[in-house]
Length: 297
Image 1 (cartoon, rainbow, N blue to C red):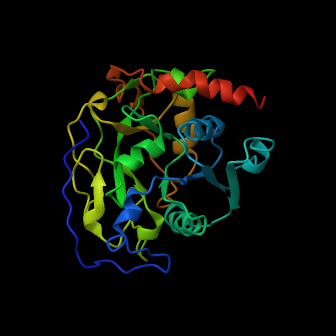
Image 2: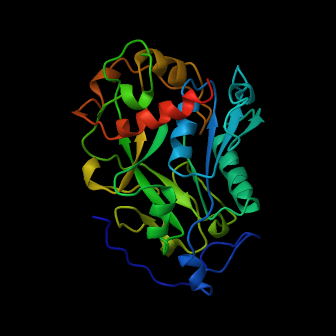
Image 3: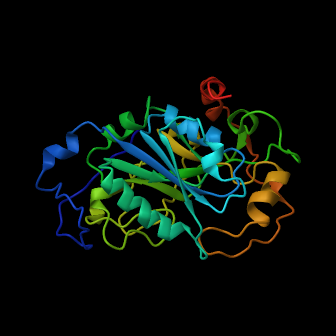
């Protein structure tokens, strides 16, 4: 079920950027097949970053653009002699980096003339249930200027130490229903001058063109309340929030958050969360990811 969408034309509610293209007057531009989609993230000491980048290249993103925020081993070294569609930019921000980098990502996407872009965290993986690639999905939602996908929370699989192998094949337990949090694809030409005030959505010139993939309007919303089971939606964002206990402490406790710069309190009960059901859907990508990575060993 792809959802029932309703939208209407309205006067511009949010201020246009210098890159704005009036798609209300150029209706055919909406139906032009998607050619370029960029994925952005900011990462710091992420052990799974090559797997993450590879997975999304294989889904059809043209460029994976990584802001390396203070990694001990620079990601330009990690990705040396790797696929050139992965671009790394080092940054040394002294405040919470997320929102400033979302603004920079918007500008980069406009300059690169991307049709759409997505900003994820490095523990978030796009999973497609009913599409063969990211462009196939976005072509289906040509009437939207932003498209939000709900998180699906994955648990620890009761791992204390990080296992060998891919995250996609090791972490196979999740919640049965989607989380209300979202991450959002957006047309860069439609992002307003305020860009974003949360990591989850972007402000666009015509908010009535904001939708969730479930069919709900996302106008003036940053969450998409839903009770949908993960296998009933056409796509979701797999959020590997903890991974193993070892990785959880390294990623979530020892490092500050990237949205407000604070530190989290240690949660001693992580193994009781998000391990509700077996979920092997993301594992379908594992063999292709391994084959791709093997080229660069």
